[in-house]
Every structure is written in C-alpha cells, then in structure tokens.
Length: 72
Image 1 (tube, rainbow, N blue to C red):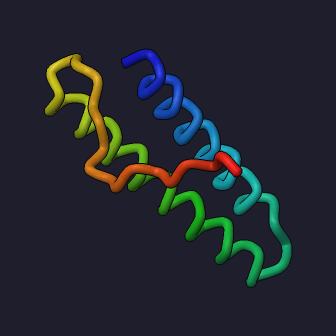
Image 2 (cartoon, rainbow, N blue to C red):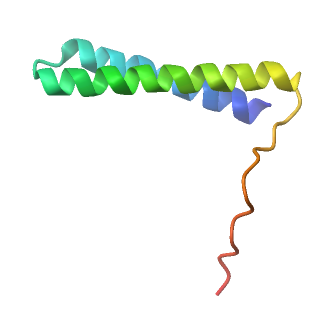
Image 3 (cartoon, rainbow, N blue to C red):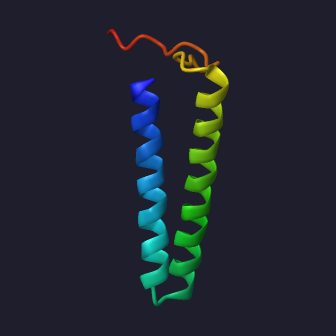
C-alpha cells in the first residue's frame, strides 16, 4: 500500500506542476498541452485513489499479463 500511496502522491505533484506550467506558458499550444496533461494526471490520480479505496488497504495486483523474462 505504501507504493501505491507514493505513486498517488507523485501523480498529484506532477499534475500540480503541469498546471503551474500551463499557467505560466505564453504559447497557446503549450498552454493547451500542459492543461491536457494536468487533467489527465488528475484523472489517473482519482483512479488510483478509487482503486485504493476499493482494495480496503490490501495490495492490489493489476490484471496484467506477466512480463517476459529478460534473461538471455
């Protein structure tokens, strides 16, 4: 759970940084890009918070296929 909490906090920090860059950007295209990034990171943070709430404090194993071995 500590790992998920740390990732959640990083997502929130990154979203705040993108929002700050958006606010400081003078180029309209960059402003739009960082606005979209901030919004996307906020959505991701919300999804992580929801997943953490649904897990009831237990570790969550994502439903992903196993990674291939990197041994040569």
